[in-house]
Length: 485
Image (tube, rainbow, N blue to C red; front, side, top):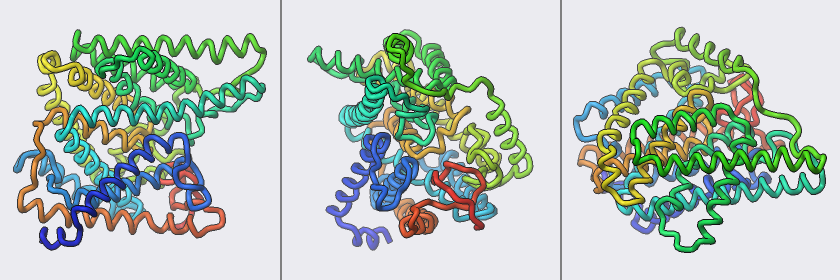
């Protein structure tokens, strides 16, 4: 069976798919926060829809690549309980989708996460193949992304200041439909982009000065976006990192404190002092909330849905079918409970807990202290990044938005590669047969499930995506018109 499948794709074609995957990854992470990768004249009508389409293409190509690669579908050893837990999770996801109000849309979410797991496994294998090179490539990719984004932002700021044409929140953060989605994107990069100053051999002092200035400018946006949740997540994650890794983590945490402090000073200068001296308002309005009543209402609704549907939930991506305001409950655990069911949630949390315990056992203080500068600071940065976004996911849709999803599983893949043996595992004969069949089914399902909205948007004069849920979105697409499914 495997040999028959292999004859349909050559080594050259496999390399071509790899190039496409890399191009899509770069397009999503580097360009899409600032530019519309897919022209509006073709299909997409918003930044969110652009990012979702690129993500779906990336996942599709990753599934195709994984189906023909020699690596196994799981990083767990044969007959390990976690493998059976993963199989049970797949069965629960399929059953939950089958019982959902719209099985097609539920399967989209399940297939997206299956594809993201494949992305993480590919990242893990690439790390095992060449840790230093992949780390530097990804870090510079994130740097290219934030520099391009800041170029757009500060151009808007300077224009507004010079011509006294104030912008309205969340502008000039135009790459995201909501300023909180920008916070998710920023938190995934915050720790990793400091690695060049900590661990890379930068002999040019002007390069170090430029990176320092860039990190301060990046921290300014943390205060411009006025996110209490993001600041709280950073603070709590820093405390957890210090408690676990103690003195080994201090150089990294000290650098974070430095840029956050200077970022706050920069924010006061740019958005308080300068407007005061010039007599002009740079920004009109604020996104800072005084209460958390909206979150409490969403969490209460999610708990109610979980109580009414404890085993299989209401279906992946289906909170939006029961809410007229928000498409997700802004809490990752409650989202999984009400949509996937309590058993599936316990399995996911169990696998995550198993991975965390393995990480803490493998990547301990002794391990970090004995490694080189890059390994030491990378281990701290990855733990800090995952912890920060995990905390933030309890108050926002970190596991929902396309860029955040891809960056999350990129970080997970790096952690798996970092904590694993530096060898690439090869699939057994049984899994070598099952893997292409399973991933082929996932790919076909994903294409068939997402195609109706894509074709409808491409052919319609308004080029608007339509979907069957109540909430105004975004969840899958942003611009929605409620329809009967």
